[in-house]
Image (tube, rainbow, N blue to C red):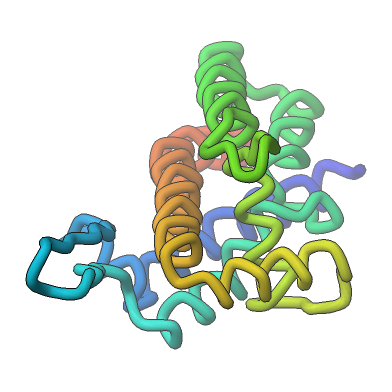
Length: 191
């Protein structure tokens, strides 16, 4: 990739972070804790207490965050790391970005829950929600899993909270990386 295309990709990375910060989802998670709880007693039927952003804000957020998640985008987290390696970027920025990226990947690949003797990672949960309903519905396995969870409200609400928590970890990474990318773009323009 040429230097100008890398610069364009890094600029797009920052532009999409700005877009995320303009979404109502971002405002919600800045001010609220995403949570779900279930309570019941002998007298009352069980009930959920749910604190999630609206589905509209979530859908809008997903349209933008996929730029960072899908490696077919030049500004994906993975491609941005490679772009930094292909520029005269500072080792400090590269190391910080890579360390945070590895921590994010470790989190995404960690087990969120075990259902029916199957370990389900946060990455699995993201893919079920995004590719099974929110952005696509053509992956049969993800679609079927999403529908199964949806048919079981207890499972669904807790998996949705796991999904939102995973998105928030991606967002935290992006906010951490933003000043690193700005610094590198500034340095590239000076050279």
